[in-house]
Structure formats: C-alpha cells, structure tokens
Amino acid sequence: MINSILVANRGEIACRVFRTCRDLGIRTVALHSDPDADALHVREADLAVRLPGATPADTYLRADLVVKAALDAGADAVHPGYGFLSENAAFARAVTDAGLVWIGPPPAAIEAMASKTRAKELMGVAPLGSDITAADLPVLVKASAGGGGRGMRVVRELAELDVELEAARAEALSAFGDGEVFVEPYVEGGRHVEVQVLADAHGTVWVLGTRDCSLQRRHQKVIEEAPAPDLIRGVSDVIYEMAERACRATGYVGAGTVEFLVADGDTAHFLEMNTRLQVEHPVTEAVFGIDLVALQLRVAEGEALDPEPPAPRGHAVEARLYAEDPAASFAPQTGTLHRLTVPDSVRLETGYTDGDTIGVHYDAMLAKVVAHAPTRPAAVRALAGALERAEVHGPVTNRDLLVRSLRHPEFTDARMDTGFYERHLDELTAPDPDPYAPLAAALAQAAHGHRFGGFRNVPSQPQLGRYRTEPDGTEHEARYRHTREGLEADGVRVVHAAPNRVVLEVGGVRRKFDVATYGDRVHVNGVTLTALPRFTDPSEQRAPGSLLAPMPGTVVRVAEGLTEGAAVTAGQPLIWLEAMKMEHRISAPASGTLTALHAAVGRQVEVGALLAVVQEETPA
View: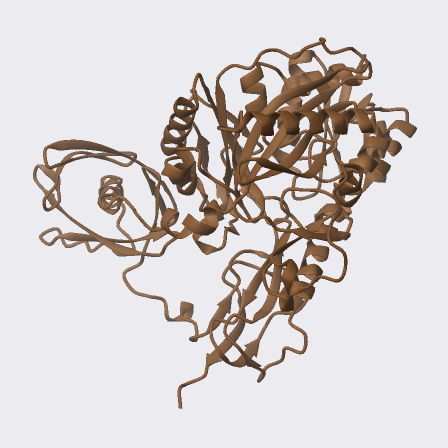
C-alpha cells in the first residue's frame, strides 16, 4: 500500500496528482528548483525538497537528485508526471533499484517506446535515412525522446535541413537531456488522433477511446477533445487494434497514449507511443467518468482493472491557456499573474494562483480549461463561453485565440487538421478590441481619483486618457468630462462609474465593464490596456532597425561569423534565444548592414533588450 508519493515534476501536473493523493489519504512530496521555491505545487504538497539550481538540466532532469529526494522525504513511490524524466527508462530503474514504487510502465516498455525511432521499428514503420533529397520534402525533424513539440521542425527547403537539425538537437538536449533526432515524412492536412490506454499487470488492457489534438502551434497541442469527431469506423478499429497491440507487444503496465496521424480521412499513420500520462488526459476522464491518476496508483499497487472499462458518455473539450503572444510567433510572456478565474461550470487545472510570477525557465502553459457536455456542440459552446468570461489579468495570453478557434467554422464543423493555424492565424489574431474599453478604463480611473499620465485636469475642459491595447499596440484616446451630475462622455450615457465597474448606455443598450488596474495596466472585460503618459520619454526611442528581445531569455547562439559591419539579408537568422524550454529565432528585418551587435552566447536578456541593429540598405 502506497502511503507517500513524490511527484518528480512541477506546476500543473504536480498539483493535479496531489489532488488525487489528498482524496486517497496519501502524503505528498514536491520537488522544486530555486525559481520554483514558492510555486503553487510546493505550497500544496505536505513536504518539499529543494533541487539547487534553476535550469531543468541542473534540477528536474537530475535523476540522482530526484531519487535521493524521495528517499530523504520518506516517500514510498514516485509519480513522474509528464515531460522531464517521465519517459526515461534509466530513471524508472533507479527508482525501483532504490526500493521505491514506480508509478509508470516497466522500464523495458519505456525503452521500447520512449525512443520514437525504436517505437517505429517495433510497429513496422521506418523513419527516413540520412540521404534526404528534395523529392522527400517536406519532412519533419523530430526528437527521439520526450514530447510537447520540443525538438520538432518542419523543413520545406533542402538548404534549411542542416540548420533545423542542429536547432532540434539543441532544443531536445535542453528539454530532455537527449539530443537524438530523426527525420520522417511530413503529412500535410492530416488530423492528429490518439488513443488513451491503461493496462494492469494481470493482462487487462483498456482502450479508452480517441482524442483529437489537431489544433497545434509549434507542434504542441492547443485544443484537444474526446472522442475524436467524425472518424470513419474502419479507422477507429485500426487505431484501437494498433494501440492494444503496442501494449501487449511491450508488456505494458500503466497509463499511456498511442498517437496517429489520420490522412485523407481514411488512413492512419502510427506516430509514437507516449509512455506516461498526457496533458490532455482530463477530457478522457470526463467522458469515461474516471480518475486516471487514481487508476495509475491502483495499478502500481498491483490491483487488477475491471475486465471492461466504463461506458463513455458525452463529449469533452480542453483548451491550454498559455502566457504567450500568438500574433508574435507565439512568443512566451513573463510577469505577475494578478488574477486567474474561470466560471464554475468548467474544470480548471493550473499550477498558478493569483500573485504568482511567470518566469522564463519553464513551459508557458498557465492552465488547462475543460468543458464536458452531452454533445460536442454543447461542450464547444460551454468552453468558448467560459474562456470569454474568464478573468486572466497579467501577461498577454492566448485566451482570445482559443475563443476564436473554438468558434471558427472549421472547428465547429469538425473539419480541422494540423494546418489549422498555418491557414487561419492572421485572421484569428487580428485586433478586435471593444471600442468602449478605453473609455471604461478612463472613467474607472477618474472615479478612483487618478490624476496622472495623459489625463489633463482642467475641470472646464474635456479630460483625456491615452491607452495602448496589448499586445497589438494600437493607441486610443478616451475623452470625458466632470459635471455637477457626474461623469459624461460624448455619445454615451454614463450610468455608473466606479474603480472596478463601469456601466455605459450606448444606443439604448446598457453594457457592463469590469475593470481591474495594476499600475499602468488596465484589464477591461478581457481587453488589456496600458495607460500612456502624455509625452514620450526620449530615452525609450530606438534607432531604426533595432532588434529587441521579444521575451526574457538566454542567448544560446549567434550566427556563425556575425560581426559588426557584416552584410545581412532580410529574414536571415542572426540570434537564437532560449526561453521557457523553446528556442526563438531573431532574424534580420531587412537587407542591410549590421551596425551593432550586443548579443553574446550565454548572456541573459530582459524583454526589450537591444540585441543588434541592422541599418537597411537604401535603394540606389
């Protein structure tokens, strides 16, 4: 019987496992790096053990330190969560060699499937060899270990292959401690469909339905649902059979996921088997009415599963809320998360709470939001509505992208594929702020007695508030007046104005605006505004062609031979930043001359830091 569990992970998944442990009366042990010392998963655990350092390689990827922490804390078992060491056979063996219970599949099964190259060989699918030609394009460079879209690159030009191989190796090594990559054909327009499996040590294998995970950015899933809609019956039968075969061929025990790419609606290509719990497991839990973590523990304790799984019911959809700017190549964002709430009608899984800091060292995912309903349209509508009503105050997020994606006709009609964002990202990220949000912000601040920045305070004259919507940068002016009756604005009746709530009547319709202010940031009904000063600070002006760091991070590479005075071409990669476990490429904005280079490998930079300056060549 397991009485104490160490979760060899952090953030949302650690909190998720701890919740089930509390329900079962099991003591919990957290790990934490130095940046995570006050993280939510640490606060929620009964005990916590420090792993000195900041980077994953120094902390969460150190199998020896993790095992020692479990022993020092008196844990009986280790749950790996997902990512980090969750698919590392050597770590699983180290856990069991130390006399601890490993809550996962046998090391031999992990070895068979954790390397995607070996898994493909086991399932009779071979990756491409080393002699790749233009006829093989497009191809996908992929990390052999790990997942989550890290170490993956689509290559459409043969000349880019070597560069992308190097980038994928570096990213995979940083994220998983294993830089092995391989190349496989890239299937355009396919659907990403996966199957949840759960097996015990007594020969029972549950195949717990399908999930569709086609909406992805950077090969990382954004919206997932169960069951996968509108699959041809024959395709479902094939992937169910292959999923069960993968389990039986490896002597699998525990939870896992077998992933496929469904092309042309009727052909299923095996991708990989993830020998761990998936981020999107809550949609399967909702549909089958089960707790997969509790079942993992039950299997790890040697109990047998029922001969058949529960019957599925209804439909579930999950959206991953990220601190990132979708309109800027999904650049991750950092800062204080002032507030995160969603309606009680949906399930929230998060590793953050109000006031927590989103740092640069780990994944940018803030939370998962899950809706379950009797039908797919009802579940999609419920999730979109809940996200729209959510309060997410702090760094820029992908919340608006999620809402628009869920309401896009390709998604509502179940016609989506993995190229969804390549086709529609521009329209889904086009600025569309509420035109009355700046006025509501100005009125709320006026009601609060604010007298700063761009507000002119001559009572007989209209007052002016200047704002910039984030992240698109559009500037707005809001004019209002103080009168004996209160606040007035042209063309709008001010029904109520308070620091946290403004009610306007526009064309006979009353509209409510919830307002929250944090310094110069103002959040109004999901619109994020920055209050602007009346005059621009000259010190903030930059030379034309300045390349600024789009996020805090570390400079990990500079283009070979790049020096001041070098000629560069538009789109040429110049500098690579690593932030939140992903590499981000900074390219020349135009052809010209590099007149300044401030980036150096290993340098830590803050958002907005000047990295280089490219002076654009002038036409003759």
